[in-house]
Every structure is written in C-alpha cells, then in structure tokens.
Length: 216
Image 1 (cartoon, rainbow, N blue to C red):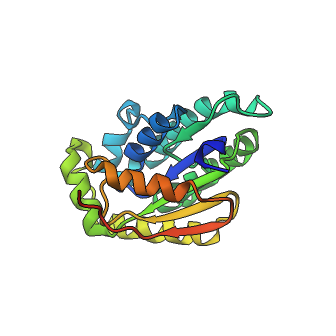
Image 2 (cartoon, rainbow, N blue to C red):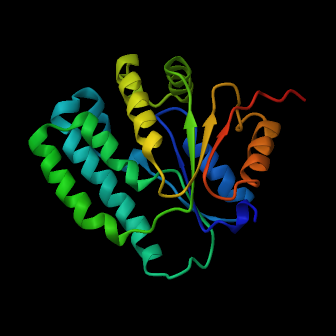
Image 3 (tube, rainbow, N blue to C red):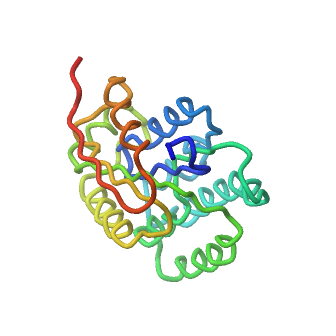
C-alpha cells in the first residue's frame, strides 16, 4: 500500500500552519481531485475577526454549508472514482464552534451538524500539522491577508489546545501527526519529498513525524 492507495485524504491544522498549501501540493503530486476551502468567499470572515461574538455563527454556518456542498457529491459514490485531497476535516468543524459560539448559538449549530454529518464521507487518512503559536503568527504575517491581522496569540493558544485535545481522541481514520515547525514544503522540495516518503509508509493507525529541514 502507498499514499496513492488512499481514497480520501484530509489535511488539518490551526490557522497559518500550512494545511492548504500542503493539500494543494499533495493533490498535484497524486493527480488527485482537490477539495479546498475558499475563505475569501466567506462574506462574514472579515467581520468575524473584527467582532467574533457578533459574527461567529454566520461565519461558522457559511463554512459548514461550503463543506457540505463539496462533500455531498462524494457521498453518493460507494467508492471514489478518483483520489480526493481536502484541506479540512469536517469532523473538526465543531471545534471552532465551541471556541467562538455562545451557548444558544451552539445549540443551533450542533443540531445542524448532527443532522448533516451522517450524509458526508469520511477520510481514510488525516494529516494533522502542528506548530507553536509564534510560528503560526509569523506565517500568518507573511501571507498578508488583511482580515487576519487581528488574530492574536491568545486566540491561537486556545485554538492549538483545542486541536491537541481533538486529535488526542481521534480514531476515525489513519492519522499522521506532523511537527511542521522546522520544515517548509512550499519553498523546499526536499521537505515535501521527505513528508511524502513518510506518508507512503502509513498503513493505518496513528503515526508521528518529527522532521528536520533538509538543506540541499
């Protein structure tokens, strides 16, 4: 079995860790169909970072609807005709809701998620990227999205802790936990290659990849 034998791969991790870049590179490398978030199309996102309590529910529901639209056609197939790579794991979606929604809003969101989740396919491999807050802040700064300038270290600390807790208990697919602190697969092909080589050896279960940067 190799990486290409999986049918649905999801890449996850906190804001700024590089999950979308990695998912896009994996999709190209594997000639797979990409399922990518489009945050710039969420009309509530900039307002969310300006006032989280006021715009959290609308932002969260927009992302949930977007993911449902992408994943629902896949659920109609018994076996995927082609490998798919996503830059999100829909099962993680409530994590952001719990961080940002008021209790009454959470009740609305939870009921929608409960009704819709069983209709959606589950990945058979999840790649979870980790990095400390100072690394996330630097990567967020470098990519220069104006609406992300309001993201602070305290919010990222909470987010990192929530991710750690979620994946501590996650057992719904093969899981690879990657320390992404020291590597840059966008700028360094060797970093990407060593990650792909590691993923090629995964045959189920939980795995940890703690790479060092490769200098050519």
